Image (cartoon, rainbow, N blue to C red; front, side, top):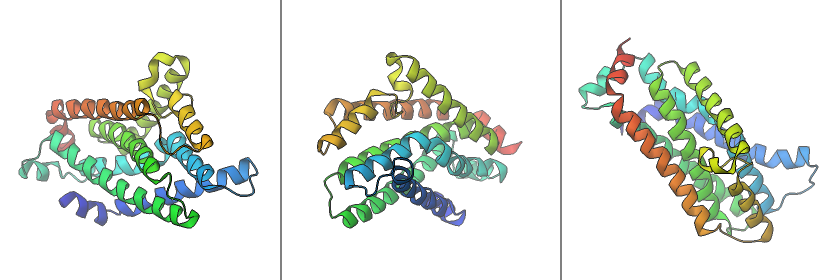
Length: 239
């Protein structure tokens, strides 16, 4: 409960909601502005929105995620967490849980509105799964980087560097799929494009498993780092 209260008090939830509003708006205006599309179908709009989340997500989400974690360092509240029997792992998992739940709520709300406007819910479950998975990736990667650094600008910078390197690596070899599963140069993006274009309502089981395994790997890496850096976490919170 304390993390949800902090999210509301520090306006994290509000800014997160604004990021989602911006993402859905960009998903609408990009095809109209760049491709000169006069009207967007339900499928075209949702795929455009998915593209916005996957291609610009690191830029849009890095600040708010880093802020939510790094603010505790700058405010010197780590000792307070320690008094509550927190360690670095519990601290990270609580931050992750709040951002994940808030994102899931916002994704569900926005997709519900879009589906009601189009009077079509055929892709609702698929989009909830995809967007939640994409945002989970950002929370885990940026959150872990922010846990390692007490400086918000450093956290954002390292997150952007990670994003650029991952895109370059995936583009260079098909064997590096798991470096950036959601990137447009990856086969998953092409498969999702085909699903939307062909009128299907869900992706293949193998691709569902790919997404789940990818985020599971990220989660386990984050947990390992969170478990091992307890002393550094305390040090960063005091210095």
